[in-house]
Length: 226
Image (cartoon, helix red, strand yellow):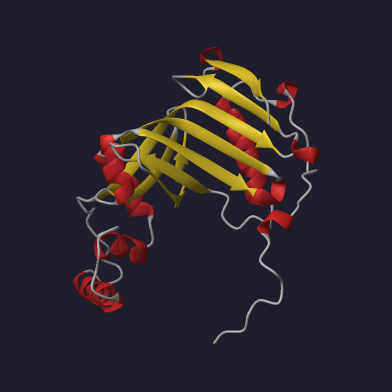
């Protein structure tokens, strides 16, 4: 039997005082994309944050049953936020039946988070191919090896498929873009910037609007109660 933890299990007793900074309307950039890029660069430069582009994606099926998982941001431009995945996965299946989605960037070390809400749509195949070609060879093979979210008999099933693919497409050869793999673009209607403050009186400033993320005229900035 494994040793029992020496510390009692008591999540309610855990306390962190958030005092890394403040956030005021006057601190914000005119557009949500500019503000996101500013915070994103800060997060990438902080060695305490391992993957600044990691974001928790929330989706829901047609009945409203939610699910979450962590994915990696691979693009952010005037249209919105982009990630890539298996198009037969649970997340993709849910986004087709219910395009409403949200992502959260949890930059805990900075006592910051960014919450994006909007509607998702599939990225066109040309854009997906361009990104697929930029991936390492092994990652390209990984997209073929896994029928993401489907049940498999064992780990050996996955490993055997990996070996088979390596034989078909050795290093230095071109790997075709899988039909079941591509990108999703989330077009935001809100982008919230959250800065932790003492006494749980956090700063929450939200851009609300639609359209281009670089069009200052299309967004209203509002402060939310913590």
